[in-house]
Every structure is written in structure tokens, then in C-alpha cells.
Image (cartoon, rainbow, N blue to C red; front, side):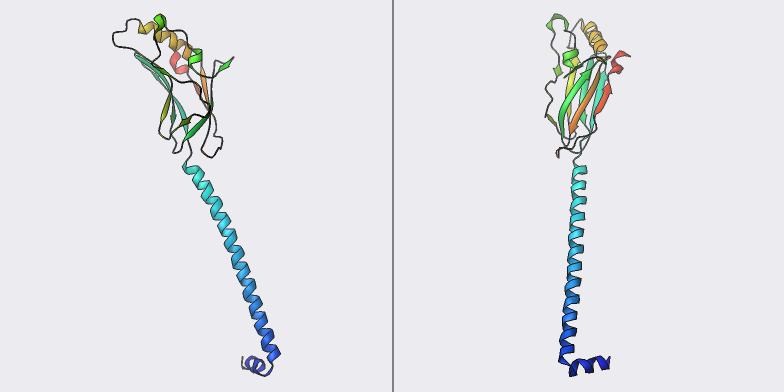
Length: 185
């Protein structure tokens, strides 16, 4: 070590060369650290985007209610982000229509439906919310509800509902299918 110090004292060109090498080594090390930092930032950003997409993911579920005084088909969003509907199609196995109400028989004596939904394209269902696709509930004092309910049950029992939707980032989620055979049992 003493010989190196002595060489640097006596030979200024050697000292300059050593200083230039040390500066070059520091610059290369700084470049390496910068490259690693950029790589880490890109990876962290990608992980954050993936995490953000998963934290607002919708989860569709078609539920049915088949009671003596009420029939209902609902679409629930059990996820933690908004569900953007692209299409709901309803099929009997041979043909397809855009909503459940399009398959329903006429109700006797112009009885109205309690609730139904149509036109689903780009409709949003908030996280934890529901959309009633069809509802028929007995009114107080209604005399012929059983016949009405049974004809609707028969029509519903042959249908299958298919829900296509995306999350708020436009990522297409796996479609949800629900056979409504529960109403024919």
C-alpha cells in the first residue's frame, strides 16, 4: 500500500489515471444502480396495476326466489367493484331473446308485473347491489294469483340466463349462466 501511495506522489500521470479510473468506476456503478431502480419501478407499477384491477373486480350471480306468493329472478353483484353489463341473453335452448320478460306469457286480466328489467347494454350494477330481472308478487286479496304464478313458473323453468359483463377497466369477465329449472320443480 505504501508503494502505491509513493507512486502516486511521485508520478502525477499515474495519479490522474487512477482518479479517472475511480471516476469511471463510480459512473458505471451509478448507471447500474439507476438501471436497477428503473427496473424495480416498472415491476412495482405492474404489480400495482394488477392489484388495482383485482380490488375492483365484480362478481355476477343470478339468483332465484320461488315462493307461493312471489317469484323473482335477480342479478347480484357480489364483487367489490362495479359491474358493467354488456349483454343479458335468455334462451330456451332453441332461440335467444334479450330479457326474461320477452319470454313471459300475458298475465290474466291485464295484471301488471311487480318489476322487470330490459335494455341491459352498458348498464352498471354497483358492488353489493342487485338488479331485478323479473318479479311477480301476490297482491293483498288477489284471488287468481296461483294460476298466474303457475303459468309463469312453467315459462321460467325452461329458460337459461346468460350474463356478459366487464369491470371498470373494460376487462371481460367470465360469463355467468344460470338455468332457471328451479321453477319447474
